[in-house]
Image 1 (tube, one colour):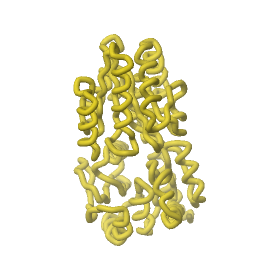
Image 2 (spheres, helix red, strand yellow; image 1 turned 120 degrees about the horizontal axis):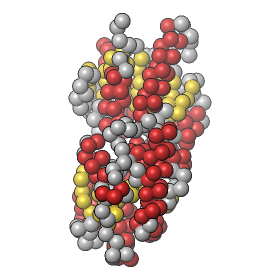
Image 3 (cartoon, helix red, strand yellow; image 1 turned 45 degrees about the vertical axis):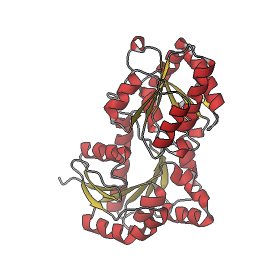
Image 4 (cartoon, helix red, strand yellow; image 1 turned 180 degrees about the vertical axis):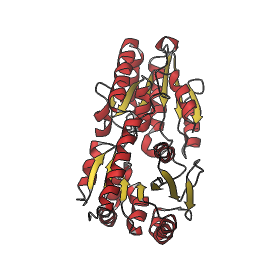
Length: 358
């Protein structure tokens, strides 16, 4: 039997798109990609669009994307990120068409103008299925009154790879940030909070591990130098899963304090590794974290106080980490989420073969 052909519209250089492609290939799907940001993914054919340098460029890639999809002739198209690749999928006219919202595409971008919001609604109404990874994101998608169902499907965690390290082997208080070095994620606020932590609790043996990488690297390095934190802050940059897990194996606390976010994969992976989490007070974070310290984005003083309270209470850190791991084991397994997504694909194809109209 010929494998069904799934074409992903998305950034091939995104670890999330790469994982999605590999998960679906592992489930017997033939996977291809149409992308504006290429990176090889073993086993997946790619057609690369002209580079996108500004948001308005997406408007002018529709014809190119349509021709690429016509050449690939997939059974199903899945666009990742509504206000870019979702637009390309909507303009292609191909069905079944799935769209996955990632966060800012519905929580931030449509607020830029009335026109952007109208385009977002037009795009979503061309989908045969919409997914989002948090209750807030699903509610936002439904607010546009799409014709299709909107389902909660999150990225999940690979449980075998992201597992707790022995707590007894963790010396001092390792603090890890896994978020990209971009303005939304307030990594500079974390650095400021660590400076306050060192000033107010000089005896605490802590190290801040900064992973993620991004355009603010020079600014963050200058900030660390100006604050005299060279001995407390380690810059790891953008690393793979193995290096990320190694950094978390030495840590007890994970910090994620964005201004806007849906369900953070980095947060789920931290939870799976049995870390206590300090998070910004956002609906998607509260959906996953029961007893975590929550702080306002950009509030370095509140963050420093939350870190100090945890760092001085090893039993609480361990208890929160164990509860986080248990929550991921119950609700956060990637294999379960990807099995569900594959079933949703099959349902769409079955309805398409039966001639069910949108």
